[in-house]
Length: 294
Image (tube, rainbow, N blue to C red; front, side, top):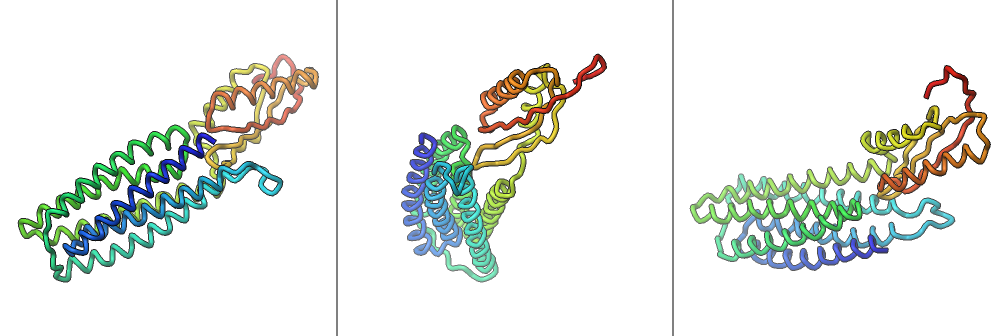
């Protein structure tokens, strides 16, 4: 519940902050006819959608397991992440088209000090949102919140270039505005593809990382009673993993003793590796002689 509530707060703060930024950006962007500021406003619009999707996805994924969903609803988090990514890609390509046109077609650009003010307010707001969501995302290993966190951080850089374009317009270097809009649109598309890939990997049951698997194997190696392992599998369930494998132990051990070895091993793996929430071990007897090696 704590993870769920923390993610909800992060998404609510994101919605409020981005609605505020979208309103001031679109007003100033339309008044000044700045393609970069309008693109930045559309970026904030996509951030609003991302925060709303984060809220909904987090709510669905936090539901307990039931008869129809034995492993819970954790993957909903990644389904909504994928929806966010697709929306971002479409939006980015639309802005890309408009930005290219503004570079080759004369764009009547009207500088106003409010362009600078809005950029500074955006950078400050986004930096505060980044610090907050980054802390929550890392603490609870939440892909949706981490995606929003990275978006807040990237928006600071995007708006910085927007600020530079506004300042350069004072020196009649107005084509920079279209170039910045182009850069923003490409960044939105890139971020969308990255979130899509991360979500796709989980939905397609991508296994745990090599580093995590090595941690599991190291723990197993610390148990001399385990002579051999095989059939190692890992399946993502939401933001955590379920691992299963078979171990071979001395066939002369009692059924109780051999399963006690497996039970202790399961608890140790789940205690020492936070990203693994469930470990399933099948025990096989093995004929042992003096030449048997682990």
